[in-house]
Amino acid sequence: WRQRVLAWDAPGWLVVWGGDAVIAHLIIAWAVAQGPVQTALDGAPAGGVVTLEAGAIQEDLSVPVGVTLTGAAAGSTIFGTLTVMGTVADLTVDGSLSAPSTGLSLAGDGAVVRNVTVTGFSVGVGCTGAGVSLDSVRVESCAVGLSVSAGSATATNSHVLFSTGDGVAITGGSATIVNNVIVGNGFGQAGSSGLSAGVNALIRNNIFVSNAVGLSCAAGCDASHNLIWGN
Image 1 (cartoon, rainbow, N blue to C red):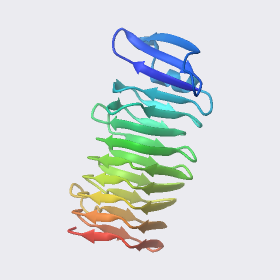
Image 2 (image 1 turned 90 degrees about the horizontal axis):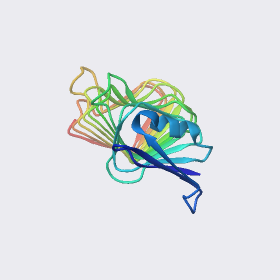
Image 3 (image 1 turned 90 degrees about the vertical axis):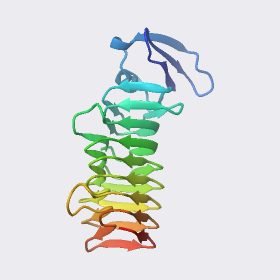
Image 4 (image 1 turned 135 degrees about the vertical axis):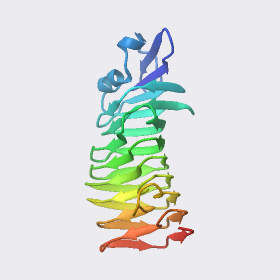
């Protein structure tokens, strides 16, 4: 099943339900005041996909287990926070209109985020679930870029840029940080680093450039084959 938010400009939203091959079962027109995206997410079945076309909405959202929230085109932007129990892909999440908060909270075990840009939050991405993963994620201009405080998280092929504090802070649980670019973090808070790991972490094949401190690891941190310069 798929649910597609085709437009959310006045006078309302057009939402189309359908199967994998044909999206034609039911067409519903929702006025903006009556049809928040959360309603679509809550109504999606396991394996369902809610797709946002290019545009912007202002809403805090929670993506249930087994449901995917995705942008269909460049420029799908959410001004608000996301709690991720399922999958989020191909979106921008912007905190410029929010109170200090965590942009993406990966609270569900097995939560997945891919090809998402996160900007302007106190914490860009916070990981507490077990087996959560981020791939091709760009986190920029947050106080802390990526925080792992519980559970287990894997971050690959991602960019963490221009955090005022730690770019990546691993304070609990465990983390695998592989094939990422970590640049320009830690200049707004004393003692901050591109990556700070106080617990078990596997850190390999990353690039650390122009951070206040490139990499800070405690006992139990396995760091190798990283490129670190100009920090």
